Length: 608
Image 1 (tube, rainbow, N blue to C red):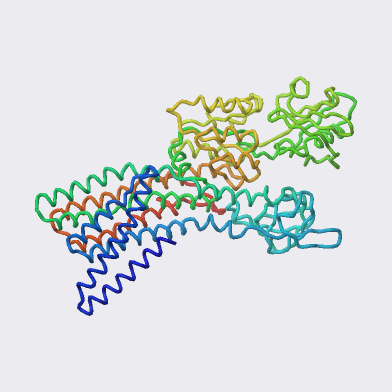
Image 2: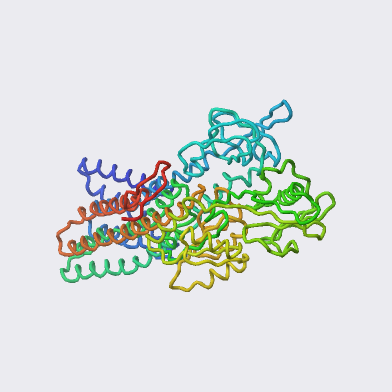
């Protein structure tokens, strides 16, 4: 708001000065502009000193010097135009940045606030913050789904575009999950609450948006590298012009075309625009730093289950080895795993022959190993063979069950590779990614098979979370930056350690999403390649905007040094430079190349 007040003040003084000019009072106009210009220059000088004290270079020094120089040589109208550039540029920066963030901010404006809770035959309106896990809610037609939950009655088409970028409504019915912030269709749904409001998908996305706005972008700081030599060159050209001609007006003429706008505005506007573009395609990028690293990525590492594979596992076989029958064994395993967020746990709970889950207490989960719980006064352990004191005698994905210290059998699962996985790996290779790898906690035979189907170069199997980190740390500098893609709780440490962590957040764990630098909101691995394309587009546009602006300024400075650009014309040209730079940077909202889209709006074309 302060930037707008300064702009209005300069516009007001300009209007009064023009009236004085019409009334043939040029001296009064000059005094007014000189006093106002000096005051604003002093205020901006103080702001620049504060910037320098924070460790950043104050590129406004050039513009402030131009104001002082033009006032000193009596070119007060030129100084007024430069002031308009400074204040107008700051105000335009605010406007452009806000415009680029519009898609992100729309999430904050549409957060669910109310829910209809059912108690028997009665329905009461409550705040979403009062909703508890297990409550039964009614979602009326055209209403926002207030929290994450599972439909227990009714069928409707739900619009998930605000979260996932999916343009087509998704059919929802009994036993299907719904996400907070999505919009119900034409029929009412009855749902059971799975997550309180604070833990629901929509609030998690809001936190990600707030993080993305708060984090500084490294490339903005890189602009300071251009700032110092650019400022020195401008002063040298201006000084030489003054020294060789003996005319101080030449000094002012050079400086008024030395626009700092390319360095102040171009990079941040391009980066925020690029982040806006990713959000429109169902990817939240938390910072400009992430875009820069992603654009230069040489290695992509993937988790297997839920990332390269669909993660929709189904129980294939239940094999008891003791007195317990298959149905009872499956019921015990599912009941023990009902509080876990692991993909195998979800598959057990949803298994076809699990009619009822038994109450579980004293639940303890050992990440990447298994779950222990007390059920009907029995200690049930479900997980890896070593965790359940069993022999790993199957070569497919399985969990082993131990009851009161006795191995009781195992349950196998089938999982399919994502239909878009192979295409995604091909696209990444075509985009110049040198190394694709998979780091999995699963058995080596299973991991190798999945990697071969997907087209992944290297496999690291049977890795615990700490061992996954070791694999990422071992990647040499020539193969960095490295991007890690995962979806589960056990992936969170790896996502943090990688140069860029990308979470598959549509069904993934909150821990993974919050640890990651970017989150894919739609359950589509192809979005990873889309993010790479957008990040490269954005970084190229950011650099081009900076360098184009600098090049134009240097050419005009040399011309002005020879006296071919009057001071007031030079000041007007500076406005042109600012406009060109900002408009070029805003191209990052759509990209350099027209990317082909499929029917659901996904990017499917590499860079041209």
